[in-house]
Image (tube, rainbow, N blue to C red; front, side, top):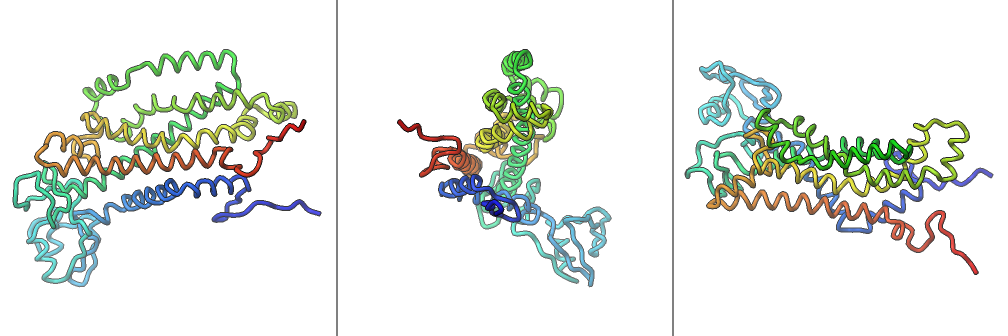
Length: 365
C-alpha cells in the first residue's frame, strides 16, 4: 500500500504536519495573530499613500478628455490657463478652470508629505482642524500625510535592512559553524573587532561629508547589523554538523554547499525566524533615531524621527510629538507582539504540547 500523505495545502503550498502545528501555535497567540493582521493592514495602506494623500487629483475630466496627474504632468495651458508650467492643483484658480468644463477627483487627504499649506489661518505649526486632522508641522505641511509617508519609508527601510542583514548573517554564521577550526576563530576575532567600532560616530563623520540617502544609510547600517544573527546560526551549525544524517550525506559524496543548504540550514532557520520580527523592530528604531538626531534621511523627507524632532523643537505644538510617539509606539508594539507569537510557534514545548517532540522518547525503567 502507498504511504499515507499527511501533508495539506495552503494557497497551493504543501504544508507538513509540523508546519501546521506551528501555524496553529501562532494562531493560538491571539495578540500576536491579530497584531500581524493589523501591521499588514497598516503597511498595505501605506503602500498606496499616493492615492490617499496627494496634492494632485486622482483623475481629471476636462473638455471631454481624461487626465491622470498621478502618472503624468500636465501644463496649466491644458486646462485653459496661461502658464506653460505644470498646473498647481492646490491653486483655486486652476480648480475653477477645470470645474468650468469638467470635474476632478481629489484624494481623501489633498496634501502630499511635501505640500506647503499656504492657506492656514494661523502661523505654522497649526493645530488640528477639519482641514488638517492632526495639524501641520512648523513648515506648514500636513501631519497626517507626513505620518503616512513616514511610516511607509520606515517599514520599507526596516524590511530591507532586516532581509539583507539576515542573508549576510546566516551565510557568515553557516560558514563559521560548519567548517569550524581556524575559519571560525578568524571570523570570531573579526566580529569582536568590528562590533567595537562606534557606528554612531562613524555616521556623524560621514554625514558631515556626504548627504545621506535611503540606500546610503541602508549600506552603512548593514555593515554592522548583520552580526546580530551570526552567533545564533553559528551555534546551530556547530551543534548539527556532526549529526548522523550529516555524516551520512558527507559519506555519500554530497558537497559541503549541498549539506549546508539542504541538511543543516533548515534547522538554523528555525532560530533565525524567531529573531526576524525583533530585528525588524530594531531596524525601524535605528532609522527613527538617526532622523531624530538629524543624521538620517535628507531634510524634508517624510520621517517619524523628524516628526519627533519637530515635537521637541515646538513644545507649544504637542500634536507633533504625540503623533510621532503614538505611531512609533504602535508600530514597535505590533512587531514585538508578532515576534513573541513567532517565538511561541517555534517553541517545541508548545508546538508539541500533549505529545513528544520528534526524537524525544521516554526512558522506561
